[in-house]
Amino acid sequence: MGDAIRDEMREKLGNLDQIRDLLFGERIRDYENRFIRIESELGAVRQEMQTSIEQLKNQFSAELSVAVNSIEKKLKYLSATADEEIDDIRQQLDRSTQISSTSIAAIDKNFKSQANSLQERISQTRQILEQEIDAVKSELLKELDKRYTNLGEAKLSRDYLAELLFELCMRVKGTDLVVDAKEPSESKRNAELLLPERQG
Image (cartoon, rainbow, N blue to C red; front, side):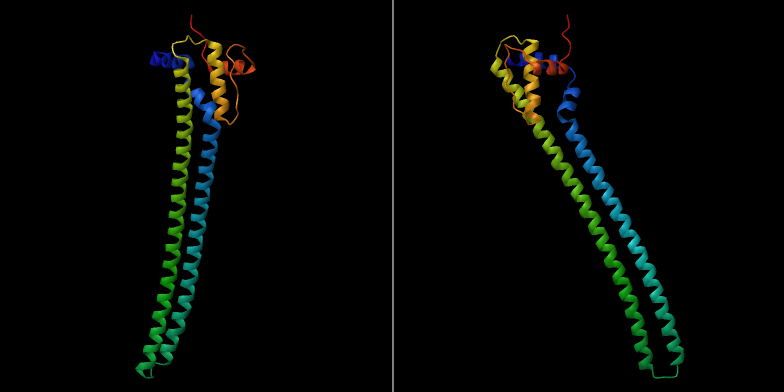
């Protein structure tokens, strides 16, 4: 009989999507707005890092070009000097090139690390929010099952169902409400908006 009562209750509740939107719609929209903001911040960080990398590449390239030109002039001027001095100049050129490459690689690595970190935060936040929604849904279903069990084989009236559903809505939203099935109140009229019209 408990299953029959639950089936009857679900049938009377009608459109579950509307009830779900009433209970969770505001929270879900808030979560979606958070995701949009986080993704927007991630895009801004990526753009900023990419711009910084390009600027540094251009700066290093310009400085390297100046250094190469200067060293080439020295090489021409010192072409008649000992091989040792020429080797020293070439080593300076190699060090300059290596420093530039290392700096660019470090910046690129840092950018990728930050992007991956932000992406991981988005994934973790999404998972946590989904778990919170599932927990609220589970709490609501447990409360409904509890009420079905307590009612036993008693015939459910539309007024009592309205009171019951309205109380559950208020609990999910953080408001306590005592249901009085014998004296329908303003809460019943509000909850009736959630129930389908009685057929026949």
